Length: 241
Image (cartoon, rainbow, N blue to C red):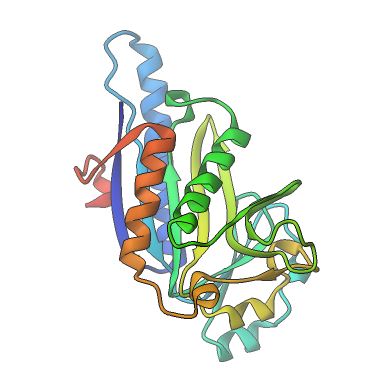
C-alpha cells in the first residue's frame, strides 16, 4: 500500500502554497528519473496530500478567460483579494477562509495512468463526504466538479471545484470544497466560466457552521479508501520542514 505524506498547512498565502507544490512536484519527478537509472533497487516514490485554506484569492487556469474576472485591481484591493494566473486546468475560481482546499501531489504511475479516472476519484471522495451529512450530490456530464440538484438544470449548483495539472504523470493543484465559504466573493467572477449555474456551500445547504476539522477527516478517509493509500505525517521532504 502506497504511503502518502499528509500535511495541514492551515491558512496559507496562495503563492506560498503554489511554490511548495512546485517544489514537491519537482522532487517526485526527479526521483522518478533517478529510479529509472537504477531499476530494481530504487527507493519508493513519495506522494503528498496537502490541505489548507487561503486568504481571499481568485485563480485563473491556463485555459481560462480573464474576462471571467469581473472586477479590476482597485476593486480587488477594496475586498482584500488577490489574483493569480496559474498552470492548472480549468477556468477561474475563488479560494477563501472556510473553504477546504486539497492539493494531492501523487505519482499516478503508482496508481493508474488515467487523468479522467483520477478526477472522478477526487469527485467521489467529496460526494461520499457530503452523503455523510445527508447532502445528496453528483456529477453533471461534461462539467468537472461536484454538484447539487444535478437533474434540474435551473437549480444545479456547484459545491466543489476541481482544477489539476499532471506532468510526467505527477499531479498537482486539486480541489476547492465550499464548507463555510463566504459565497459573496463568487459574485466577482463567472465561476469556472459557467454562466447559468450557481455555487453553494455546506453551511448554506445545512443552515449552520460546519466543523471543518471533521470534514477534513472524512475527506481523508474517503481518499484513502478510493486510492488505497495510507496517510502518514512522516516528513521526508526538506520543503515541508
